[in-house]
Image (cartoon, rainbow, N blue to C red; front, side, top):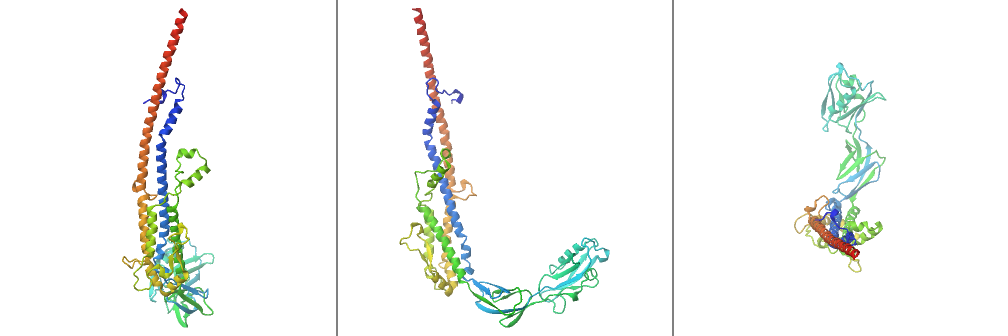
Length: 497
């Protein structure tokens, strides 16, 4: 091998040897450029597959809601008054209620005046155990023990009261007003015979905080009428036949509470799902029908350096077309999902066994653009009729997860979609995977190895060219030297004559 310092550069021949070698190597490297472009094209295809998988995954995320019965059997709850809000479960009975709130539920609270320094210690006189009581859901007295140390500060005492009550009460001191507050954390009346919070005799509550159980306020149940029947609730919330009423204020007159089937919500959910499906079909049709411009192969780095930004942008717009043209996986996905939509379901307890019976049909093929082939359309009036007639039957026909002939249409569509996504993942991988973990990645690695081997052969070829030209130069230089010697000899002989 000839080093750069030993290469002959055309001094003897007068030729630009370096340029000649470069021109020869440019011709030799044409196959390498083609390999680079093939590798770039494969990378573009891989990324196009991943984009398609992302579109499919986005659509798949909608199946969760579509396979829930509440999507088809949802209810709508309304109140005629801001004083009462209402929500309802999907199984709530349709009905109209008249509700009048006479009294809101309140939490028991005891307030007293006391001069306290929150940072001061309680001292030996107050150290020890102090008791207080609350009442549970069954009206039974629950005694709590507060254990104090002499070096506890009053601020720590209030924290200990909260802990000792197991969350039944909260206590604090308002320094600006000089008042101690102790109150139940729950609204309602738990002790029919007296105060909700009772204090033991000669305790920190009575001696230092000046609290008196007889001065308690609140601790009342909510009182309301339901269709004329008087009811109570310890909280300002009440559940009735699947509906939850929330009281915000008392009312001067009865509020009307309405519970009805939410057909609008179900229609909207199904329509949004079909619209998303149609977007996916249009995208996949576009990708599989997109023409490939073979006159615009992907640009290598060397080609990019010779072009302006605008030229690169225009070129890539053409070179990226047709990356998935005629792709079998995408066409299989479209075909598989279309077949799943059309299949009949064994829905024994309902008259609905196919999507056509609830107003979902295929877009007419007449005068329909190629990219819109296979889309669905909805007759909203027919869909509403089906949901009003048998929403549970619509749900089972679309979303049943059974593994037999009663498997729902959407479950079958999802099966087909998942299979296509798995095939794409096997082929194009995920961004988190290494190249050797998927088919196209291994192909890209093999191409890189071939390119590296080709590059090594090119180095050997270039060295061979330089060797050949260098030998030619040396031969010519030797001939020139011999000629010069002959000329010199002949000149000397002429001088002797």
